[in-house]
Amino acid sequence: MDSPNLQNIFDNETFFAGYAALRRQPANYNLLIEHPAMEALLPDLNGKSVLDLGCGFGENCETYRELGAREVLGIDLSEKMLTVARVEHSGSGIAYRRMDMTEIASLNQRFDVVVSSLAIHYIRDYASLLRDICACLAPQGIFLYSQEHPLVTAPQAGPDYAFDPQTGAPLYYRLDHYTCGGERSVEWFVEDVRKYHRTFSELVNTILQTGFRILQMEEPVPPPEMVQTYPAMRKEYHKPSFLIFKLQKAVDGLGRGESSTAFEPGREVLNHENLSGLPSAE
Ligand SMILES: C[S@@+](CC[C@H](N)C(=O)[O-])C[C@H]1O[C@@H](n2cnc3c(N)ncnc32)[C@H](O)[C@@H]1O
Image 1 (spheres, rainbow, N blue to C red):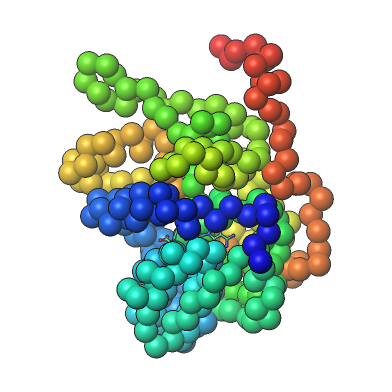
Image 2: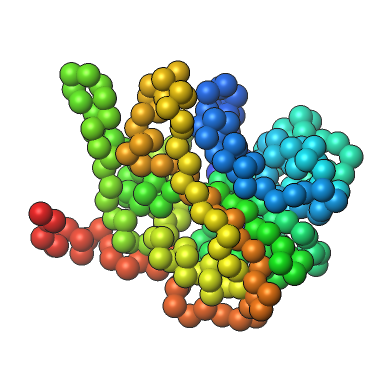
């Protein structure tokens, strides 16, 4: 049974309909920006076992098999997402399982590579998840993941821009509450979609304290040719939408059982109320 704190928003009818329609558009950000950036960072998958956390519709699982992975296990919380995955992206060597990624320790399995696209900002306890991932990776295994960029998860009411009233050009991105880590409730197809904001220092320190080393980080933006085709994408140059980490289990990886005390998940450093008392920056 799902924990009462776990939000399975992708199984909400209205949310699912909106999200599926967005992903079916040929010019969506996942397809144009996130997927190519992730693929460029994939390790050699030949003969490897791969675990995909929050696999959604399963396109990536199929890609990993095409790139030579021996076996791919895609797990996801949403039955609706997995139903599409099973119909549209099945094949030999690909298995799907409905499961909360915070319970991967119960798989009792080792993988050469763990991947996750745009799912980890839905997880409250980042440190605990990273320790579990480290524990289920083979020695020096790779964990490649993307998440919404911290500048996207920061604003209390979700991302927003100011546009030039005459030309419609994006003038600037409205950033607020960057330093206040913790839960966000935003409107996206439905009200109260819950995600978790973590600052860069929380992300990087947690990664280093849970047994990983950082091989590469990327904040992909569309190339100029793409912006010519899709002018609305120009706003990505003010703020990238995605953050990608390529991590490797350290030889002396701490893994499961070790604790990092510096970061409590979902901790509020400052909150909305006490921020309003601060003098505004010059
Ligand atoms: C934005 S979608 C991305 C899907 C896919 N990775 C992709 O890039 O196309 C996020 C996915 O994460 C899944 N998810 C969210 N929380 C999860 C959890 N605790 N355990 C497993 N999957 C989860 C959602 O159900 C959803 O399918």
